[in-house]
Image (cartoon, rainbow, N blue to C red):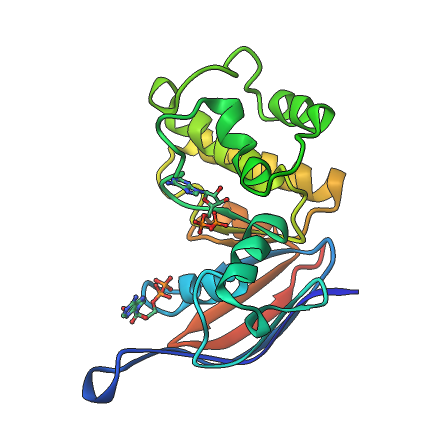
Length: 227
Ligand code: ADP
Ligand code: ADP
């Protein structure tokens, strides 16, 4: 089953002579459980694509379907709920809430949604992320790699239809990057978590099931990796 379908998606920033076409008629489908790497040079439209799939912005035209939901038929309020329930976002610079501790950051989307925390899932996640004993730490008391693991926990806590990661290892050294990659891979294999990961990291791209390359707002390559 396709968990994600993008149809004729176009995004233009600005108007008139200064307008930038960031995405130009992009269509793609992703099956449930796929691990997709998105590659391409800086400014090619990768982040714009991820944000439009994640309900963070609105497209100029085209359609995004996530888990059967026609994302942009929704009101802004419904979109906020969509972002908390259906997608998990991971950024290069973690975007943790500085005044909340590890557990509070991980459970924030659930709390914002007014739903009870699944304590078993939380405990499993904390263990899997290697964050046991750090539950009460603030982001400032954690290394970059640990902060990114918290961000991944927050993204996975709601078991999203799609986890969307924008250069998740871009701020990390080789060892921490490898750890993050393994975590993403493990959650893909063990939980069947669908993943879309923007990356310049060759190892991540090669670990994916599929590589989509974007240039100038268009898909220029889309290939499955044979093993
Ligand atoms: P990538 O993630 O591949 O680096 P982006 O999606 O960030 O590419 O950007 C694609 C194009 O859209 C670039 O030309 C960028 O300058 C432009 N762009 C991105 N965000 C905005 C914005 N908020 N306002 C204006 N232009 C933008
Ligand atoms: P929402 O409106 O659904 O909270 P946002 O785009 O505001 O969506 O936030 C995206 C994610 O970042 C959410 O999972 C949310 O829990 C988290 N978040 C919200 N506010 C902040 C903040 N100030 N700093 C870091 N992360 C935040």
